Image (cartoon, rainbow, N blue to C red):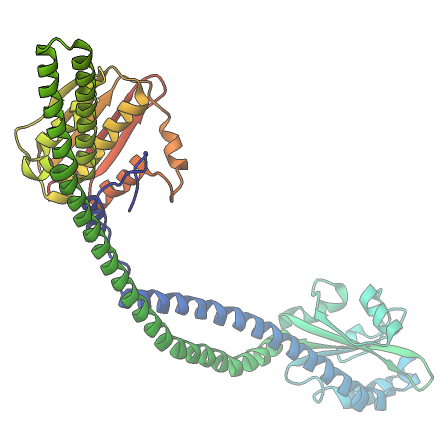
Length: 455
């Protein structure tokens, strides 16, 4: 059972209001739909990421293929037709290389071939206007000659040695060292259209894309039945838990009524009878002139009456009989009676009757009870104003005092498993479709305002 600030119960009807007002958990169909949509989003994200990674991998593989093709050309075409006379610029050597390269190697995606000396002189190109020209080799090209490696990169078409390739679009250049018969080393360089590289990469990527998407789709198809079964089991367990909670609340409410009835019909009646006996004995002692005995009997009778009042106050808190027998206004009057005995001025504005269901009537009563208890125990107030109004399908309760007040921000730090008091009642008010506002500050008193719809 939930507890108030002093550890006593908030009441079965308040719990019923919470159960009735809180929306049921998400249905199995809704949960499954949300899971399917979330899984679809994840699958799309994974598919896109996989596609990007696959495309990058395909581009890398296509670039490696371009390196391999250039190595094959170097060993099968260039080196067999490379002579020392070509390095010296002999026209016959150039013509011999042209026969092996032009129209055969420089066909399709490969658009240019160049042979460089380590000093940066072009000794051969299928573009004869470049033969004999000198340009400084870049650092990576020098590193290839030094390390005997193969490299590939996008061409810088703004460089002067590439001025005749600028109309070819983006080009991928691959370069590697080749030996001459005289023992020198030249730099062999090919230029291929980058679109052919990306086309090969796209073809590879399109081959793997159906596999990736198919695997994700199969994963979803395997997951959905499992999720459906799990969601149905969860939904069933939630319904069972709600049923158990409802039965527990109803049993608690029944037990509270039984305890209140037993106390009222048993102990309270016995104490009342004992009080009448003491009053009668006091009268007899006083008539006989036994003053000390009469005073002792009077003290005992007063103590019994205080005990009876305390028990009746406790009965009202456990289960207010006037709330269901005489209605909410009468129960609120009974609730504020003990404040008068404490010397606190009480001002009431109550209608004769309020048409309100039992659950919400008890919610209003519990809010008033919590506010009045805080006034009595913590506020040091001299005056309490309680107003109950019903208009426009809404019942409004206001309890205001002129006490020391408090900082409402400390309610937010109340432990969820401890004495929840007004914080719990705020949740119950929201669950019933209403609102509970607390206007307070240190030294300025406290006002508790509850609004709850009649239906």
